[in-house]
Image (cartoon, rainbow, N blue to C red; front, side, top):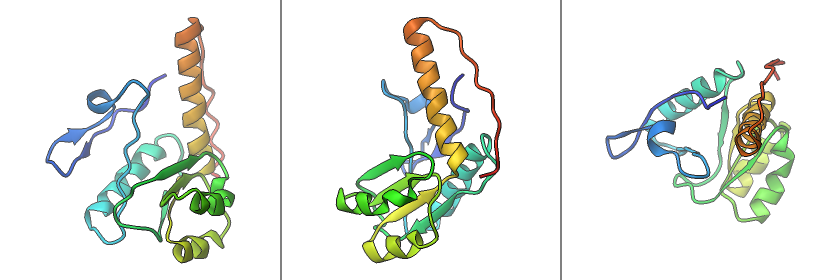
Length: 150
């Protein structure tokens, strides 16, 4: 199974997606900005891409810098790792879900946080791992999608 096809416009006027920008270790595209109207489109597009795997909306807490430098990714319920993200010097944490108080932690500690849904963040990693192992060991695999809405 491969990642869904999508394209996002770059600030250089070109369009980028998995087929045009993927490196040897995969592709992560993330645009965050506290004030830029351009980001509204990115949030919508990210929500659409993730929504093809999971119907939950993507929530962004804009507590950190406009220009993102260090991103941490924790699948599932990684909101509890917000203190560790701060202590590690990250300015953005991408995860599935977290407790309500993380909004206040993020804004007080200067962090951007992206909550993309517990199920959505875990299934993409599981599918990527299965695909990698299948390619490496020449094994068949299939993913049984069962979104819970959480």
